[in-house]
Image (cartoon, rainbow, N blue to C red; front, side, top):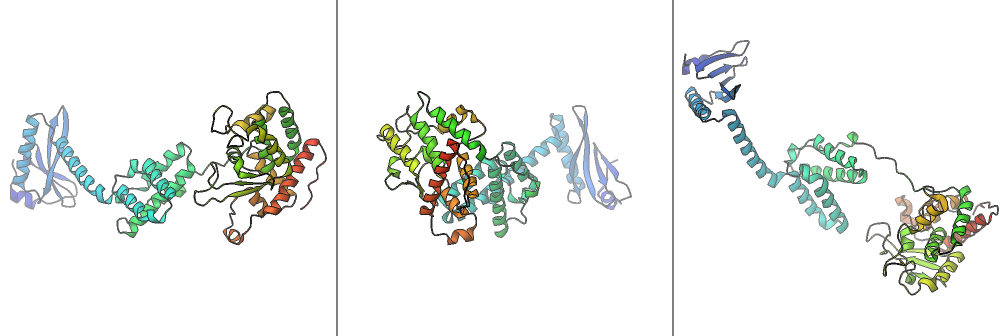
Length: 416
């Protein structure tokens, strides 16, 4: 029997949900809390489904019946009222989301923050900041309203970066994302920071240092280098690069890209320009690095000059004009003499630092020798010297140590 407006209005709640039928599959469902919902049961494709028509009294009995008629008409034409309603709702949500995204999305706020900070940042930092954001974060959360983003969304971004082993970039990006949320909070567009997830991230893998032989392994290594050097058809350029690397404790890239114009052999000095390819540190914050040359290093360079002196570079590539030796040139010699996986070009820096430290040389002088920035900012603020003359003595002592070690003489490190 059909319902009346009075019946609907006076229908009372009980301790269990109950239904009052109006016919045609439509009924009023009364909840224990007194809420009243219009529902309509129907079958389509052999399945029983229920359509939510509205809530009484927002939707009156007559309005509910009109919606029932519309639903029956859709069914007669092969349509599914619930599916059509859901699709329409999704379209409305997408339209609203697009409007919100253009003004209050994470991506919009991130770019706004970037624009605010660019005048205070270096060009390199600004480019890296936005580049990492666009590559790893914005494709996932860029279009989301900033208030809809949850911690798990950010965790998933970080997990993806961990899977490809870019932990340093991951940590940098997490800090960047967190900063955007803090900016949004400060400007009244977010109430919390879901990027506070560091505790949920995987710890960085331990850094594997460059392979390096020990002081006791040094004498046979040096003799193996000399034996290799005495073979026929060995490149004097490659051997000279290895020898200079050992004697100066510089970086492989600094040796490879060195130019004859950077050397003053009479003064025994090599100045590595701040702009040289391979220099460490950010552009604009690098400084020229003056390297004192021991007598042995000067002799190696003088002997090499007739071979490569016509070139701009000290160690030019024999097969390509205007290029330098490969980054693997020195490593290839080390591997050929039987030290693959045991020693690298960079290993000489670690070895010299260790042995010279045992000799008692001051740590700040040795750090200057390696062109390391002082980690202690207080100490760095008071350092006004590069210890060049003291380093000249240290480097000559290092070269003499190598010569004695190769000759098999007993080398007793003396305290400086």
